[in-house]
Length: 348
Ligand code: TXA
Ligand code: MG
Image (cartoon, rainbow, N blue to C red; front, side, top):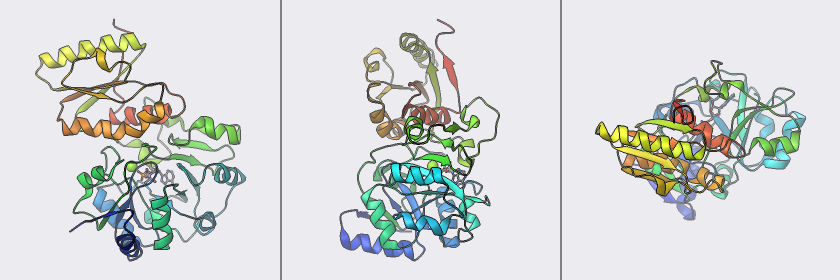
């Protein structure tokens, strides 16, 4: 298949892409979090093709994207009071809410669950596409399943060129990690995936908010967000996270670099700007300053993809503070490393 790559500012091409979406074709588009792979959410054949193009397991449900709040009504059975408050505070934006679904939503979207995840993206290109297509848009991240999510059109092209009809280029995504997924079907809403809207921001509006215990990587609980159970967001090389005090982390990573180099492995390190000069490894990726965690989030997936491009054999990554957007960053790093964490302070 020939994938047509268009510029988000090219009006004529844009209308063609919106029309294609309405006609059951697949269109990748930028949102403020990551690029999405869109299809008409009410067209089962189109949605089926999303799973095929991504190689996505069929038990992992999709988020439905809308551009106007009133469209939510037809997709869900009820809108709880908590959700109304959050819509007011955070839509459009990087917050996905899980509602009891209406009969309109096909099973293929929800992977048979009786709930549906809905989000209203803030990106003007996403909004315009959804409005012009005139249909609710199912959109997972526009990557091959398991790989780091795409935050530039180049990432999308690398993964999906030749597999989908359109890619809309809208430049790099601002947030860089996916939306927060929040279950609002319970009295106290539950975070199923940390993301662009932080726990602290949610608590400011709602008071109490719970977190799915299965998000703790070492727990044996089944996550309530099916997508959270897979190895995910992963570069091709094996990845280890090193936790502890900053000084011990540096020392430990330097020891690991030596060990792996001795074995003839090409070593990558993911580091904060503060520590970047303290390592000598084959590939050092500076994720940004710990003082600006938002910037680390923005470039996170590009950092992970860099290791693939440079074909490293093994990656050692620093860990980041789990507050604010740092929770999403660490959640993705834990998934990318399949939870392989080395505690630096234990063995000095
Ligand atoms: O920022 C985002 O959310 C991006 C952009 C494109 O909007 N989309 C995205 O979609 O990250 P995806 O498919 O990569 O992740 C959707 C997550 C998965 O973890 C999935 O299991 C969860 O949402 N999810 C979807 N429907 C659900 C439901 N009914 N109940 C619980 N979790 C659900
Ligand atoms: Mg994804």
